[in-house]
Image (cartoon, rainbow, N blue to C red; front, side, top):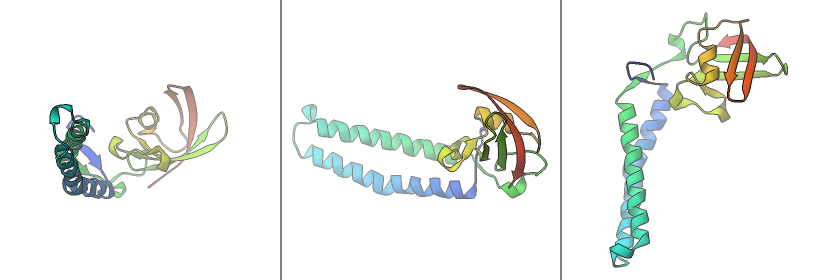
Length: 159
C-alpha cells in the first residue's frame, strides 16, 4: 500500500478475495447462525459456553468480512505488462545469487496482500523486497534482515 491508501492486487488475487468474501458472507454466516441457534436450544445463555464460542466465532467472521470489504474499496489493479522492464518493479520475477553460499533463488515481488513465501512471492515492503526495488541486472545488493546481512547479485529480471 502506498501513501494514497491503495491496495495493489493482480486480477487473479482480486478474484480470489472476492470469491472468499462471497463465501464468508453466504456459507460462513449461515454456518455461524446455525451454531448460535443450536447453542440457544441448550437453554440458559448466561452459562452456555457453546453459545459464547459461537458468538465469538460470529464476531471474528464479521471482522474478517469488514477487513475484506474495506480492502476491496481501495483496490487498484496492477499487471506485470504495465511495468517497465529496465529495473525491478512490483510483479517482476528476480533471479538472485547468494554471494556467500553461491545458491540461486528466484522470487516474485508482489504487494503485501499477495505475499506467500511458499510460492516464492515476497512483499515489496519486506526487507528483501525494499532492497531490490529499482535495482538492475548485475547489481549487487546487501540486505539487512533480522538474521543478519545477506549479499545478493541480481542475475535476471523477468515478467
